[in-house]
Image 1: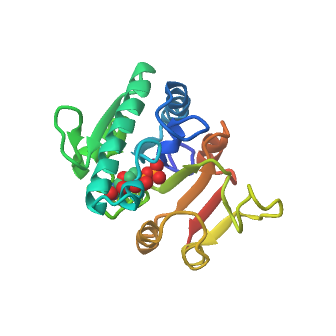
Image 2 (image 1 turned 90 degrees about the vertical axis):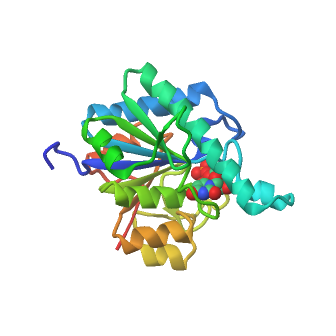
Length: 239
Ligand code: UDP
């Protein structure tokens, strides 16, 4: 590629927990700043960055559903929560002089642009970090699916799923000391073995559109940079 890197445009999927402390709840400005710093480094490498952010740190539809709420209502609350996270990330990036635009799949004109695909692409071409809030805009979906969808629509080269472990394992590395990390797995294996990569809707969408998924540890300060340079980092999910 002209930038000498493996990827020209990435979609970074951040779970809500990325913005929280160990306990996984709320928004910790220090965590947000640390993530913004990583994104800034990527921008400095001249890679286009779109971000899809989750909301598990604030609200998950499942929690409401389990306590008797209408699942769709509980999901809409989750989508609204992603916009709060999006604004927190926007704020941290802008304070580091990284230009951003927040677009929301649920219209709320006073805080974010509506999601408009061609406009998002335009922002990316101009070097702006596009932060996509509101998930897909539909209940019964996840922000992982939103990430798969947007990565495809925005013609990203890869969907980078940032997690707290350095890839996909055959069992939970926190529980099993002999857990083995995959350097590569196919979409089919990830689906069939129910490996904790992403939900099946998100995985299928990536498979159908040949969107590679790279699972890596965002807490490893250099992982993202090394991945962009094409070094073997994390787990690649592809055909
Ligand atoms: N959500 C939704 N539709 C979407 C994306 C998200 O209804 O397209 C809701 C859903 O209730 C979900 C919540 O928003 O539980 C937060 O998103 P997610 O669980 O994907 O966040 P993450 O696990 O990435 O922090």
